Amino acid sequence: MKVVETKLPGAIVLEPKVFGDERGFFMETWNEARYQEAGLPARFVQDNLSFSAKGVLRGLHFQNPDQQGKLVHVLQGEVFDVAVDVRVGSPTFGEWEAVILSSENKRQFYIPEGFAHGFLVTSDAALFAYKVTGKYNPKAEGFVLWNDSEIGIKWPIDAWPILSEKDRAARPLGEIPVEWLPRYEP
Image 1 (cartoon, rainbow, N blue to C red):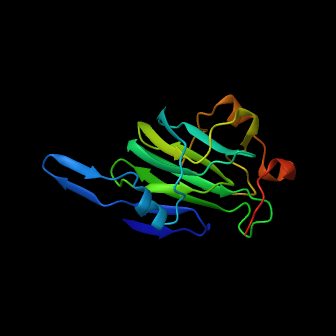
Image 2 (image 1 turned 180 degrees about the horizontal axis):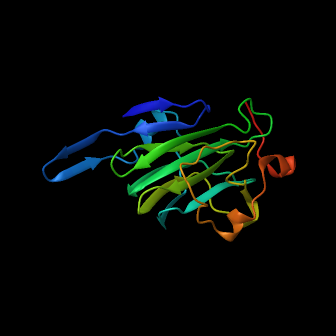
């Protein structure tokens, strides 16, 4: 497995070994010892799966308290996947990293606790899988506006994306009270 560091400490891209032949392919999507060696936590508590059409943008979501680290990958299709550091006091606060994840490149992206996460479906549809380190807590949900000009994510779209009501109502990071955001702990 190849591990690719990003400019956001703790946010890493994983390129698992893929074994393929005329029958198809095999790959490990999780191996506790190997992934822990790569810097991921050993404990995940829940697996999630979402299916979305082209142009759907889900995010930018975080939880505080009850933060969630996420190991994400695409089973079908392609997404533009984004992590944003929203930890108050972090040297990379408000910075973002994006990775193209697809069923073809088979990459995985680990988004650490304390980061907001979102993705845009760039193929006709996408089946998106993720493991999380914490349980979903609707009372701890936080939303950062997907097109916050201060963050400046360069989403690969020409038209307005398809958003949920919650994502349409999200606020820019600078307008979210700091007590609602995770804290950076070096």
